[in-house]
Length: 289
Image 1 (tube, rainbow, N blue to C red):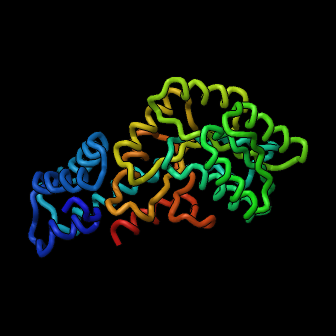
Image 2: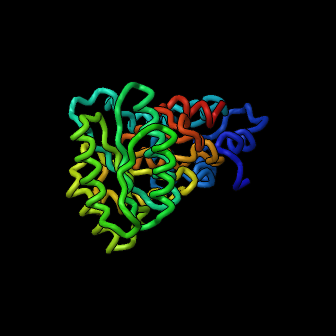
Image 3: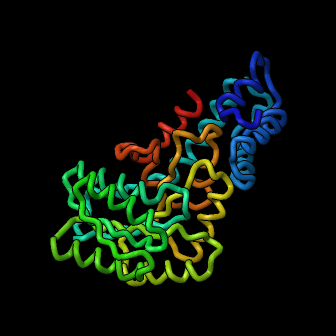
């Protein structure tokens, strides 16, 4: 049952159960379901405490009422990660966005996706290839730039990534562009030297917004990554990628609950248009519909 979605697990556990169920029994079942769906232990315990608090007066509940209460608690967690921040209403030019995150979280592709989103809404953009540790990352961003008609600022592999970030911002200033979006190397969060390099990039670029990309499929690894980046670098909010391939569906609840940071977008595919504004109801409907 480990590969089943959260929705399917709940259906299988309570299939044919229309009698009144004890709250303690429900808590035990939900505990297992949530953990198997990649919700962290800390967030699972919070959810069950809230469930018990709301259900305490009843002692016993119908299956459908229990599931609706669980959905209500999960939706509230996701709503706490909403933000009134609007990417399209920023007066500062250029508005500087710095992307951070480890390899494999879709960071470079997300730089392209965000640029596409801004261009589609009438904004002008420059992209900076500050991941100078991998030639592939520079080439990937250059391809995105060519496809989007956006200038990509880059230097050779092994060059100073902070210098690339600086050049990107100066290019955007000189041409009065709306946004400068800077990609960075996929730092392993445990590598001290690379973390120090990331701090230098942030110090020089002075970003208006620092975004951490995480992989919905990474489950508890995503929590560990975000914890280290929050402590070492600091970030303003997140983009959660691979939501389309996350069969279990639970890690986003842990991300929303444990970091108290806005989630700006979710990635639902590899195409440029597959970056959609964060919508808690969309996520709940995807899991429970």
